[in-house]
Length: 322
Ligand code: F6P
Image (cartoon, rainbow, N blue to C red; front, side, top):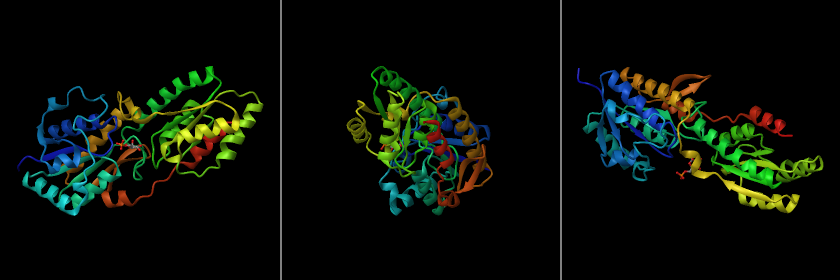
């Protein structure tokens, strides 16, 4: 039997923990007697055949490092049917028995297209947003929320000193998970997320005026980037409540940094599972977390799932912030 050849790439927005996942894939593949290749810059690098053989030592000391040693990209060419066919032909010409794709939903759609062209793929959820329907957890989420909490704690210090209101914008265009978890962890006065419609006047302004009457002098409002313009929100708050308000957009600081223990462990377990699936020829699947356990789903099924926002948790956050 020829040795199995597998390759790994990271795609889309990077996330802390991608390196730990790459490491797990490489080490597990070699453990099971496979040849493991790295593909630089996601699907772009695949199309350009920027592919190199990896060894046990290629992944030394990367376990806690943010970013991705394989670099990442969003490929316009790969999003066309011709691009997918070209990528599939490259995988076949190089006798790749499997591809591990670490990324978000968009990257999984690419994996599904490759599977349809006969390339065995396994997806691992890697994005700070925690916005993939089939899984409770995406690699990078824990590091991102810990960063957001640390940054917001710092903002709170100065907010309190100046009796101000700080509007803290966190990442999440369509998903409020970073905002929700951060808001609870910092004890924010309000949290605005794209999944839940809100009445700005009633849910923010009137509540602030009410709290002012009882002596409250400083406020933290956490806003997911997809829920509104934090600068405009701060301006409106200043005008309508009389509190000086400042907006801080945390931005890409949330995408980097030393990877937390949880992200490292999840990356290790998911990377291991992905290679195990390839070893057993169970392909066209996405690794996920369900009820705290690592599981896997057929890729089409995974992509057809609808994401459910945790409304109970959101209601709890609102009740804790009175
Ligand atoms: O990785 C997800 C994400 O961080 C979103 O929360 C954010 O909107 C987006 O990526 C920004 O990505 P980029 O700067 O790479 O376009």
